[in-house]
Length: 251
Image (cartoon, rainbow, N blue to C red; front, side, top):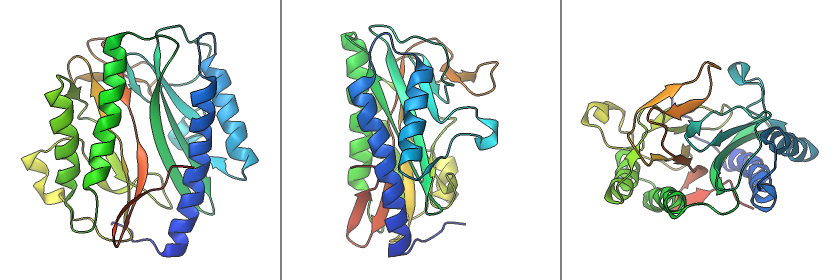
């Protein structure tokens, strides 16, 4: 069932989104070669808790950390640990925070030091996919328009899209209805919902340099590209308002 939020509930979600954005702002300044992914996780948890919120990911279906940290060929759900970031890596950082009973969720992929032109082009394209998808959001728009915007841009630039994972509704729970695919599939027509004021969704393109196929590592969480090529991930929490779309996970 798709939940419709009140203005007060959107206020709570905006606060959760602000905290997520604070974590991302810290990461833009501090992610660099030589940093441990576990140190990034610890810093994120401290920021979240200092704001009176709780890290939504920690303990979620047993996930052991406060953020997901996915490096290079890791698509999503990477577990922070003893890995030391190296010059030329890219790292996708997914953050969730809960406050006032509501959740904010957003991700970005960062360059670590000096990256290759190929890696930078992937980051730029994936972020553009997210921006284009947000740009089509508004009352009366179908979910397939979001998928079409992402798919058209990614594929025009020679990339592929992960299909096993998608965006989602969000509110009192991190994952709510509806599912928000990053591509158009006629078989999903029965789930091609129309956006309405009061809905909140997460849009999150996952774009690969190589093929779209992925697999899950033995840790049961980390999703990697099957061919070992780079992947990037960007995400925002979006509120559908009477006049358009509002990005909630910003400062």
